[in-house]
Image 1: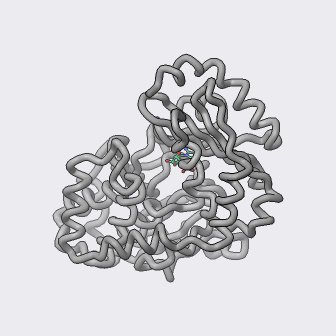
Image 2: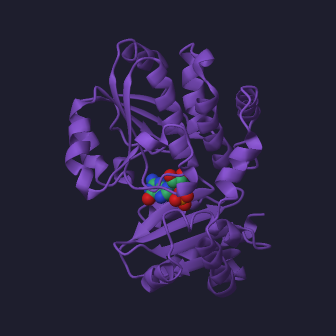
Length: 338
Ligand code: 5GP
């Protein structure tokens, strides 16, 4: 689905644009949203970025951040009005409206033209236009391609470039995931040529860890990481009390699952977190083993082959037991994965 021409036609007139992205936005969600916002503003559109939840302060340096509206109950009326006034709603880095919490019904009901820009598998058919490519390494890459294909590469300035680089760098795991193609490096090269400071961007995103987060990580690695060699599986569970004890903030558990995946011999990892209203689960795998299949079949989720998420309305302990109970059906596949 590559409605680039139609998106170009839509943007020929000045539009009131709302951009939104998934809950607990990460660097690709925010980088692609703010990069697109920067570009659209330069083209003369009125643009507002609205996120379904807040996001880590380590992303607050991204250009345009100060104008982002993070949804909370007290801004519901204001956000509803923005949805009604919008002529175009861009939906970035998510494929179904249940990934944007309270904003989902508002986007569904809005009369605006909805444009999906995303790289997740199996998008829900809610958008009028889409630039969707599951082979893309990051939504930031799609925003970069879109700007190029609309003939506006010259409008990418250093602020937009920083946003897009942040998304590309993080969603490729600092250029090491299998999605890191020649095109990814060519995009990175084009952005670097605009004199962005790559080491500073890396530092601002990765070397910006609060002491609370580091202490939580230490506790998790010492006490909460469990390995099940018979499934080449490692996982972590975190209770709401533990999160409270370490004063955990949005984003503090992000990336933790990768420590489980990094254990020698492990090919699948998970983290199960009690978020109060539900248990959130993150899955990671290597090679051919599809955590997307596991998450969508058993845990109401989805994502990519090697990175997926899901949720459960059972208790944390019951969810853990449920996960361990489904593993035997994947045992052979897991053991064959190297
Ligand atoms: P994370 O574990 O980092 O939250 O998510 C990993 C990948 O799975 C991301 O691409 C994310 O968008 C996707 N994902 C996470 N949770 C869900 C979910 O509940 N449903 C779907 N469809 N995708 C999810």
